[in-house]
Image (cartoon, rainbow, N blue to C red; front, side):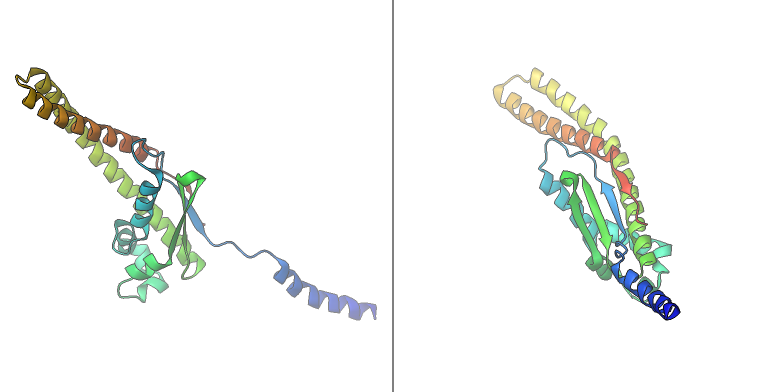
Length: 196
């Protein structure tokens, strides 16, 4: 009798333990978008970031589609054009007052999800590095233009010319400040958590 009870317990307990165990969490990644520029509104900037990640024809999804590892995944290889499928299954939410984006992918196997998320992060970092390089090259041109306009404002003979130069100088200086803020933000972009 004791042996029967012990055998019964051994047969019943493992399935019960499996149903009581916590489910394995979905893979996700966390992207630190850097500090927001003082000149822009938080939600507008984050919405633009989220749209850039989830748009089926945006740089992020296209970058993932060009990744040879991703093209070989069974779930992706079966599709003629996986962009809509990728975009439809990407979910992005804001964390940490909007500075962090949690990115999840909810299709395919767990291994495929991890590969797609990490490819998305690599694409984002590559895009960020290119944008940072472009802005760092562009900034000196705006600074020089602002300095030339300021000098023209100082040397203008009549009030109409002076006002025109001053307005253009202020607009150029504002753009240069926005570029500086964006450079600071892009330098701080980082991956807080790779998918695993």
